Length: 340
Image (cartoon, rainbow, N blue to C red; front, side):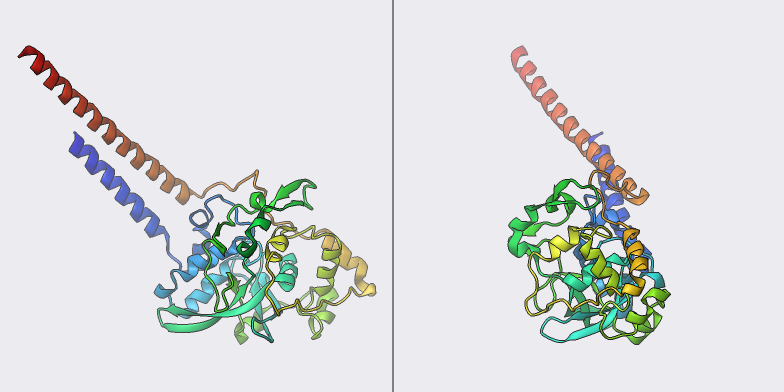
């Protein structure tokens, strides 16, 4: 009986391992999204895109460089939201580069307010990645490491969505520190947590959709580093960041700003279209997750959890059976001694 239960437990544990490994295929950005609950154990991705980036980069050696870039299209570097590989998630932006200068490329976002947070707090740095077709220097989106001042992650703030006080630790539970470093992060050449990729190839730059009429003028001028969203970003800031990720990413990313990389200035709203812009800012989407309403696990995550529970229960059964058999044998020995 014991041998049977042991074999059953080992079979279940092997099945669980195969299940987990078999699910980790990264052929498309959607495959990355399917790993959500393997990456975010709490079910909350607020301000934790470094975990998406690490998950991909840790597997980069099994993919050609082009595939690595393709998988990076599957999430928003600011909100952490999984997103489709679709033109409407593409935003052209110019950002300061760590070490000096600026670089223009395409970032992937769930909604336009995230490009505003990126302008204020995200910078570009390089890292050489070993891929299946060799080592490649890539340009990544980075922030200063909030764990260099870890005590500030406990700070309270007024949530612009609910109007209640909360803390960053509660609003972004996946942000953890190991010493003075952000846990689970891959770090760039200058030592900053990587939260996404900037796509600087001409194909990506040419594929960015044209903006609606109110934004086309500023989109075509060099004065707007967000290429058409700068005026709305200025209005959003004036309204207290009441859209997109609200204050969560803003507060995390400003804990340790990267030296020598001041945000590029945004244009002031054009009075001729101010009313239209205000309306768009007021109706902008809100994408911060409410920690009181965690996402439900996917079916694959649920089945993996079920296997884990069954395996654990079986191992517990083996332990109980072993203990019972040991006690029964000891009892027989005592009884035999008394009879003698």
